[in-house]
Amino acid sequence: VTIDLDITNSANDRYIIHNAASAAAVAKLGFSLPGPYQQVMFSVEKCYTGCGWAAYAYINSWMSVYQAQYYFMTGVQVHELGHNFNLAHSGGLDGATYTDHTCMMGNPLYSDDVGKMCYNPAKNWQIGWYDDRKDTFAPPADGGYSSNTYRLVGIADYPNNHPVVVKLETGTTNDYFVGFNRAAGANAQNDEADDEVTIIETGNNGEGYSQSFLKAHLIQGESYTITNFYNSGKDLVVTANTIDLDANPAVATVSLQLGDVTPTDPPTTAPPTNPPTAPPTAPPTDPPPTNPPTRAPTAAPTTAPPTNAPTAAPPTNPPTDPPTQSCSTINDSNICRSSTWCSWSGSPKKGSCGPVDGGGGGESTPSPTASPGGDGGGGGTDSCATTDKKVCEANACVWSKGSCVPPAMDLGCSSISDLQTCLDSGCSWNNGQKYCF
Image (cartoon, rainbow, N blue to C red; front, side, top):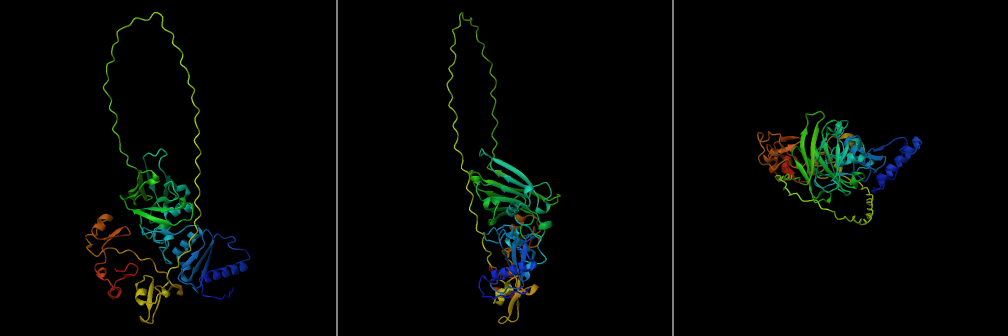
């Protein structure tokens, strides 16, 4: 099938292209899309106009569109299918839109060979795949103190008889969700906070389309506090008591403590006293009559007025995906060379910027840059020989993927403050945060 189109180089051209492709597919197949299929994925050979995006999808729908090489990248596919499943983006600790890299809706993976990764606890609650492994924590009706302990397993161990996600009900539309981010099975290539307890906040009661944010990820022994939980005046403390990776299945024991439970001293019992002995009295000769008690009427109970049902939050209009810059739009050789996903071909003045692997001849989306591993001080090999995250960071080392490693001091990269010297020294340059490593 050949489709002839006039490209006007406007922002709407990508929709003109996919609408024309959809119409041609309907004519060829003889039925309207999606027909007997649940999802339909369009692959555009290359970006013809309005470039700078890898893919896009329609919310709570069946259609997604991929340009150039991005159609074969698992992380991009799972992200766009997530939008089809009515999932919004996942932001990180910094509050940005895409920076929760414990979740595919945070755009963490861009590769054909890497993609074993799932969604975060808030998305896992919403999507409905694990409804028989959910649990909810809410304050008691009498407003008193409350605590509970849960044994959580990862998504890969879902068939076991433990919850994979616990909802912390706040009494508002914004709730918290706790899960065990086990890096195994379908989540083996997780990009952030491997084998830690993660805490996510989202809106719409976790039941509908809503941007989520990573609030904390905990190693064994760490806690996270939600102040004035449920507007109770009490703080809720979430603690990762133990994380046992040797158990089968691996399990994280998480405790929830609402308020400080202070035991009260038991009452003291007064020593018994001997009853007094009363002298005998002579019985009366004619006891006086006793008047019967009068029965006072009891007022009928009053009925409390009914409580108005809560009003549903208005639906959230789905945002459109902001485009991400592609390599071909970079005209500066230094900026191109500083990108993990791009490489510069030719001379500095007349060359061009393209993807590192050249896959499919298309343009690669730069991956988010990581935070610097350390400040360049200390962090020798011996001082980094520890399995404790806090000791690791106290020794000026870097905690990465569950291990303590020394910062890149052997290259002296962290002391370099300008891009060109950094690259000439064989180091790497973080263009977003302006540091050499």
